[in-house]
Image 1 (cartoon, rainbow, N blue to C red):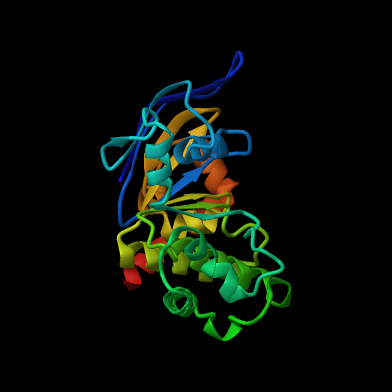
Image 2: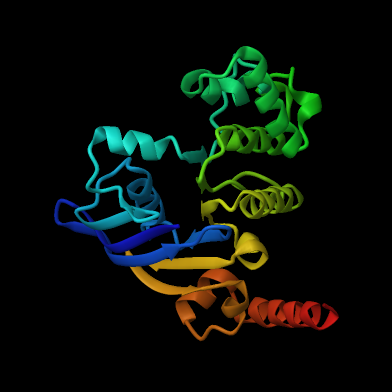
Length: 258
């Protein structure tokens, strides 16, 4: 669990985040949504320590990350996994070597143990057959799955994903969403996903934070989105009144069938 308490971030005279309070729960897919420039990326950078809040606290299972020294923050970061927007794979390394990289850097495992662990993670994302290929030889969706395998190879307690579906087609995006949701539940991970993909919101949004111009505008889950009267949220998620009505009807019909 990650708790954000009264987090404010200013750059000079500009307030980008203003008094954000939020609990990101373990074992759930926690989504951060908002329009471009709303402060989503700045919030995630404050959570992982790439930026320091102007005021407020970030608690990792009760441990105040903001007040820690460099050594303390380094220990917390070893409990984090990161999936970057562009996958950020090393072109000169094979898929297997990319997944092994964190183990090479931070574990005391033998080569055989590191190889076995990396192969386990590749098998978890259904890419064991691609282990000897290079990133340029696989699709964008496969690259994202490699990035997820690399992010979980050290068994992180906290998993951060920055626009994991960026640049992917809808079908592949669903695969990524299902994968992240499954891993979150399987390992009871605190997963935080920064996304523009409203299909992800409606598909795996178990705990959603909607930021509007640096303020916490709304919090809820995917079911509560449907019945929300918050017009700013409706404008973001459903784009138009017609789409909203159609989407509502589809979801209600799915609920009846279940």
